[in-house]
Length: 96
Image (cartoon, rainbow, N blue to C red; front, side, top):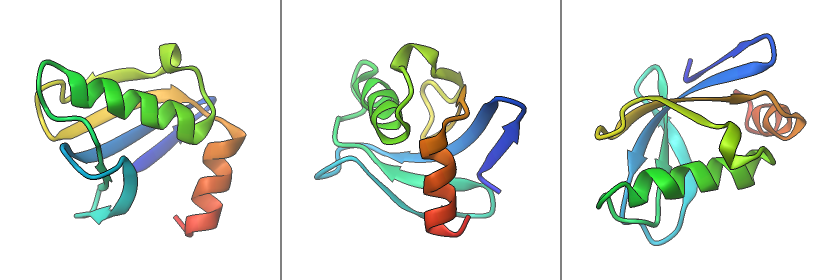
C-alpha cells in the first residue's frame, strides 16, 4: 500500500516524474508507491517544491505541515502530512 494512516498523520510513498505537462496523480507504481507527474523539472529542488505544493492543494493542507521524510534527491519519496477530510475523500473516490 502506498499510504499509511497513523492517528492524525499520513505517510505517503510517491514515485515522482518531473518535467511533465501538468502536475497530476497517475497510477499505482509497483506494490507500494503512487506515481505523480510533476510539472517542474528536477533542478535545484524545483520538482520537490512543486510536489509539496501539489499535495497541499490536492488535500487542502498547509504546505508548511508537509514533511519530506526521505527521497530528497530520488524519484521515490516518502512524505508525511496531517490527515485531512479531502485525503479521505480522494482515497474513497479512487478505491484505494
